[in-house]
Picture 1 (cartoon, helix red, strand yellow):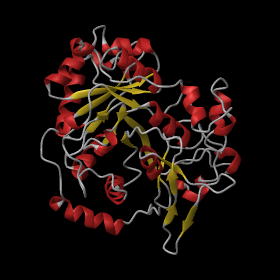
Picture 2 (cartoon, helix red, strand yellow):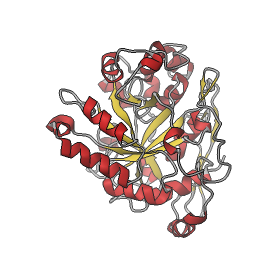
Picture 3 (cartoon, helix red, strand yellow):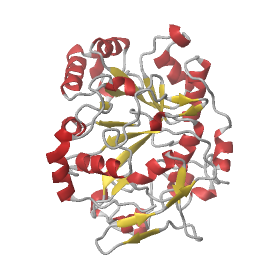
Picture 4 (spheres, helix red, strand yellow):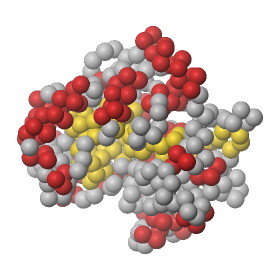
Length: 394
């Protein structure tokens, strides 16, 4: 499978000019494209595998996440890549490979420079209890990699483990994927977080274009049926529905960019954070958050679960619902946290504060929702067993 990842400014201009005439779903009901009590795998996982790597996303898919959440950046040569931080310092060996550039922003590196980095060994050093030798050498992923993993594929590799790719005379990279022999049939959606829009002008348009090319844009081509279920049997099917993608950002400018490009026709979440200052106890603050979410066309507000100070108090949750919005909270690590934001009742009697959980522990969250009678299945194997099935041995 050949993949185009080079950004074309000319294509973006054409896209902007032609958006008004594109084929879109029926107006209204966009919020319902995302299932309630959704399990959103934060960076794939940051607990069981190196975050935002092939191992993390393959694990999240096979564990039963409804969505896999990614953080998006763009390289110097316009390739969309997946990384949380502005730099490679925390999760890679950039200081060893490119001495003196460890504090440089991701956008100053080319894709082939980035492919030299080890994105797994730092996890092993930091997390000896979860460390696996096979995590060493994991690469920084491209945007498309995550979608192909969601489809049940994996990166196709040379005998030495390096990924297959070529670069044509126009500078476009071509990658290859293959069916994942360990795929168990779950088809999650993708939860896209845009980073620092000021540093990546028109990245929203680039993503729209790329989603169309890889046939994941729910506004283009073969639009999924409104009747397509979120679950088929005991297998996640969100990736085949109209809610197959959700877009989000902390940036108010970025949210307005999302509104312009996606035209309020895909689920969008306005992210907020920093509960440490206890600002969420102030009514004016929560009022302004809700008002902006409405202005930018968001259907969801994403807030931190907090430590001592809650990012989603009962009062704030009620205000969000009164405005016909929903909430997703990040990022869960324990059952105790899940109980706090879900409450004590089960099934139809439950009145949770949050409509979805962005979790570092998909395994715990899937089983928690199953125990509370709002999810049809629980995990079939333990996290280490799933990793072993995927070929990540000790």
